[in-house]
Each structure stands twice: as structure tokens, then as C-alpha cells.
Amino acid sequence: MTTSPHILVTGGAGFIGSHLVERLLAEGMVVTVIDDFSTGSAANLATVHGHPGLRLREGRVSECPELAELVAQSRAVYHLAAAVGVELAVNAPIRVIRTNLQETEALLEAAAPTRTPLLLASTSEVYGKSRQPAFAEEDDLLIGPPHHVRWSYACSKLMDEFLALAYARERGLPVIIARLFNTVGPRQTGRYGMVLPRFIAAARAGEPLRVHDDGGQTRCFCDVADTVEALVRLERTSAAHGEVFNIGGTEEVSILELARLVVELLNSPSAIEFVPYTAAYAPGFEDMRRRKPVVDKLERATGFRPTTPLREIIRRTAAATAG
Image (cartoon, rainbow, N blue to C red):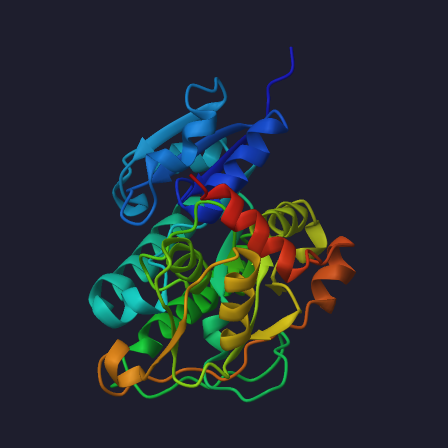
């Protein structure tokens, strides 16, 4: 009798994590989720509630008494548990730094004895204030000064990367680092400043879409299904061990144009309202004008690159939140 592979997903009740859990369960995996529901929600796993292959452990990764046992039982670990969003970093920097560092360290230490492969979800924020037209994995990183709390999130995730690669070198732990760019789709909340769900909610309510500064900042958005596809392919690619990969869409759009697209596609009467950073964030807030990934390395390793068009991403996200 064959036993289904066991996978551990930390942060599996989060936006991206829940979609990943659905995918793995659909493929016949046994999936254990560890999540403290600080930013995730049990509701995100409603479609798989009661699934015989799902095991849910509520709590912090670092406080899970059976962590070492769960990791040892696993074919692989996806580490998605983290404090998320720039807005949270601005409002609760201690929580962000502690969560990102402590949970990752606990998981790496648990995985090292059995050398259980671990995929670490990082962020495009680690590129910092770089002015490159597009970011590649080997580029230098330029982090802002410590008194601008926005950069605490970038630094904490960058330290996660350094720590994971240190475990790879010193302990022989198979790790993969995935730098996620703006991922959007069903179940994403605007609670921590995520722009597309905020725009969709405002457009649906007929309220103004609040665009920060002049709206000329550009971003690239990736459908969550594409992000999950990339994560799964990377985890199953042994040549990816010890490497860093960007995951993101490459269709660049300004935030102002994004707002206009949302209004158009939802046939909304909403106006667009410009809000200075000083009114939206604490003094000293810094933003990046561009954030576009180079995903050639991902495609070379896995044969996949995200390609879902932005208009389709907006339609899918809006349809999932209708009603």
C-alpha cells in the first residue's frame, strides 16, 4: 500500500498559502498547515474543510511542540508564514521583525537534522530602493535607512534569505528562495494595504479609489494561480536548491492606470482621489517608483513563467469577491 506524500505548509491559511494547500490536496498530498491566523483565516480553507488529507495546527511555528516531528515526516516544507504587507511593517515593526526572523529560524533548525527540502517565500521588497528598470536575482540590493520603518520588513525578509542560505552551506539543507512580487487574486484582503482588493472594494461601493502621490508608481501583478504553479514547480526542481528565484508578472502598469482599469472593468461610477503619502503613512515613508521582475531564471529552471494578462487578473479577483 502506497502512502501519500506529506507536505508541511506554514502560513497555509493565508492568501497564497490557502491556494497552495488546495493545489497540493487536489494532487493527492497529505498536507499539514501551521498557521496562527494573525493575518490568515480559517475561512480561506473553507473549500477543503473536512478534507481527509488536511491537518491543521493552529499556532506559531516557533511554538509548535511537534514541529521537528512534522518536518521529519514531510517530503518538503513550504514556508509562507510571515508578517505581510508594508502597511503592517509601518504600524507594527516589532511584530514584523520578530515574526519573520523567529519563525524562519525555528523552521530551519527543525529541518536541518533530516535535511528536509524547504522553500522559503521571500519578497520583492528586498530589492529596496534600487532604481533598476527590472530586478534580477543577482542584482545588488539597496535598503533604506533604519529610521524609515518601511525598510524593517525588507531587512527581516532579507535576513531570512541569508539565514536559509547559511543553513544550506553549513548544514547541507536543501533550500529554495522565492522572491514574490505583487501577487493578487481571490481571498486577498486590503487590510494591510494591498492595492487591488482596496480598489475593487471601493469601485464596487461607488467610493473614491485612493491613489497615493501622483499614481505614477508602476507595479507588475501576478495571478495567485501563476504564483502557486511557480512555487510547486520550484519545489520539485532539485537544480533549484540553494538558489534564489523571482516570481511575478512582467506586465507593468502605473497605479493610476490600475485604478482606471478597475473602474472601467467594474463599470463603476467611482472617482479617483489623489492622497499624499504624508496623509496615508507616518512621516518619512518611502516608496519605490518601479518594481518589475526578471523571471528568465524561473523559466529556465521550471519551464514556466507567469503570463495571465492584467485585465483577466482584475476580472478574476473582482468575480471572486462579488455578492
